[in-house]
Length: 107
Image (cartoon, rainbow, N blue to C red; front, side):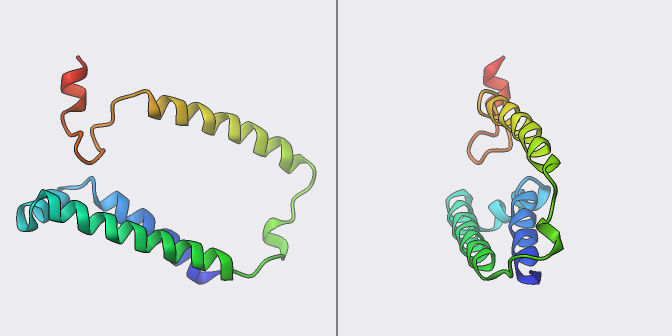
């Protein structure tokens, strides 16, 4: 379970770091295309590690033991997640790689 949590933290940290001033420093040091390639390679490696950690994580135990109310909570959370997915896909995202000026051109 520790490996799964660590892999998830690394994946989230990698993506959170990409929208900070450190990204500009990295792009300045190696160039935009090399940065994108390295970021893509690290992201794929993190996803592979996350999938491996998930497949080898122990199952069972009290962590997943919820009552029938869990289905109702999950349904509400999934509806909320669907709302955020739709709004995220239909709104220009200036933090996406290559779309830094997306909001400027949308006005």
